[in-house]
Length: 179
Image (cartoon, rainbow, N blue to C red):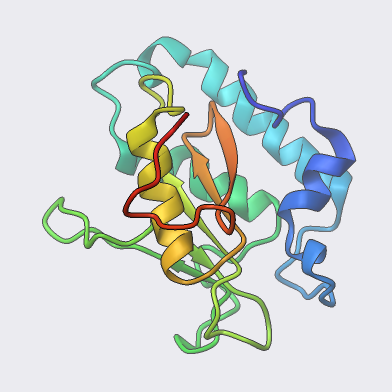
């Protein structure tokens, strides 16, 4: 894996779970680091078992989201499927649903924290794990989501690779370029 997922340890877990934001753990949270790490390791093993297919152009973003990316965020304690957070106005994760296969020009995931469901804490842009996600176009797209709502970070993620992008230092997203 090119990312820190399998080897990142407790610091990686703490950086991505809702606990980072100093909130009380609820029943939607996984039991802790060991359980989250075990679940992510299982996902990594599943990915590696069929890696050739998952890295092919035949494997699509929607499949990557369903098979790995949703499960990754679930393992970290985010209620992606709204099993416990049923009120649509009080959900930590808003997932973009594509209509007729086309994007609505929104980030794939917007993550919020209790009790403030109006201000996004960070966005996640998902990609299919077909090629390197570290491109200027992908960075621009991901940073633009965060920049427009003044979030400090955004995540670019295809399960195989994970990029945490700092948004607030991007002064004008219309002129931002990758150096």
